[in-house]
Amino acid sequence: MTTSTRLSLTAALAVAAVMGFSTARAAEVALAPRSVVNQSGATVESGGARWLGTGANAAASRLGLIFSVPDLPRTAFRSATLILTAAWTQWIAVDVQIAAELSPAPADFGPRALPSDRLLTALVSRYTENTRWGANGAYEIDVTEPVRALLARFGHPSAIALIAAGQGTPWGRKYFATAGASPSLKLSFDDPPAPPPTMVPADPAPAPHAAPPVLSPAPAAATATM
Image 1: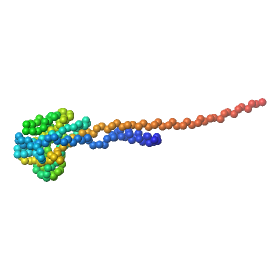
Image 2: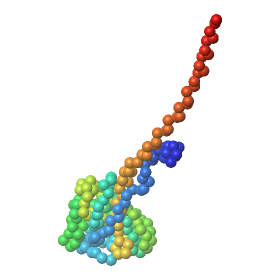
Image 3: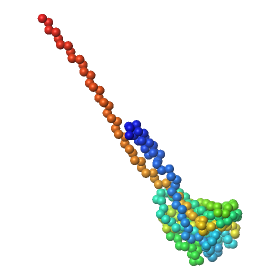
Image 4: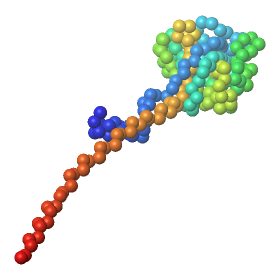
C-alpha cells in the first residue's frame, strides 16, 4: 500500500467517525396478538372478525387486544402503531379512545376479566375518522402515548394490553380481520449507536536521503622562497 493510499484511507475513516457508520432506520419490533375481544355491555366476544368503535351501547363498547412482548431493543422508545386489516369494504364513522392497561403482565380477557375492568394509563390516543376502508387494506393507528406511559412505568412488560373505548354514537364501528391478517403492534426504537471506527495509522514517511557532504578543495602548499 503506497503512502498516498494509506493517507486517503485514514482521511476516509476520519470522515466516517464524524458522519457515523450506521445508515439503518430505527429498529422496529412487530408484536402479534394473543387475545382479541370485543365487549358489548357485559358480554365478551372473540373469534372471527372483530370491530373497532361502538355497538348498541356506545358507553359500554370496548375492543381489547393483548400482544406478547419478546426481547426489546435497549435504545430509546420512539413510537407505537396499531395496524388493523379491514375485513371487507366499509364506510362508517369511528371514534375511540385507546389506553394501555397499567400492568406488566395483563391477564387474558374473558367474562370475568372484562376490558372495561382494567386499570388504564392516563395518557391515551384518540382515533376519530370517517373514511372508506377497502377490503384487505391495512390501516394504522398511532398509540405512542399510552405505550410510552406503560414502558416508562414497567420497562419491559411481558405483554401489552390495549383497550379501545367507544365514543360518540351507537353502531359506529369498522370490522377487521383476526385470522390470516391479524392485528399487529409495531414498536419503533432509536438506532443502536454506530460502532467506533477502527483507525488505521499511516506508516511514517521515510526520512529523506542525506546529501553527500561537499568537500572543500585542500589549500595549495606554500612555495618556499630561497
